[in-house]
Image 1 (cartoon, rainbow, N blue to C red):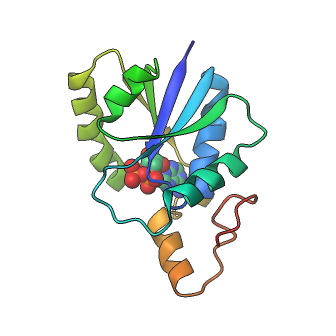
Image 2 (cartoon, rainbow, N blue to C red):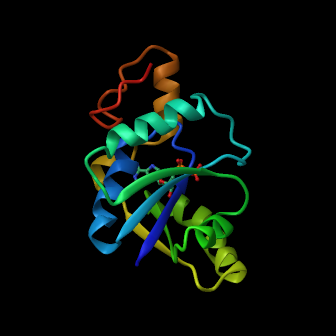
Length: 152
Ligand code: ADP
């Protein structure tokens, strides 16, 4: 079984995340969207809401599941029998951020490969942080989040 973990905060899930998972789907038998609970980033939306939105986004996809985890991503992967970490790249800034993480993850467990997909151009400006900023000030974020998600 080829199992990938797509780790992140998903605060909230965006069309960028949705697209990466859907494009990676033919390559894996299962993709686990893993919500990491211990990063230092501050969260706007509760874990329950973030889980619900991810579930709604992939409701019709049997190969995709959602889980939360604490601790190292490589340890979570091992516990899930996942040999791949899936990440999306929007820009060289993402690349510079991701490179040492992927290299260190490889040092920690060389059975786990990081796998990167470059974002579709139409989603390259979308980030959870910008969606939060727009949402906070009452702007319309519906074009940036999956169609099945209604932020509340
Ligand atoms: P993190 O807090 O780990 O950065 P995010 O939830 O922000 O988690 O993102 C999870 C993954 O999705 C990361 O690999 C990130 O680069 C990727 N990602 C975020 N937004 C987009 C987008 N618009 N297009 C493609 N990938 C994206």
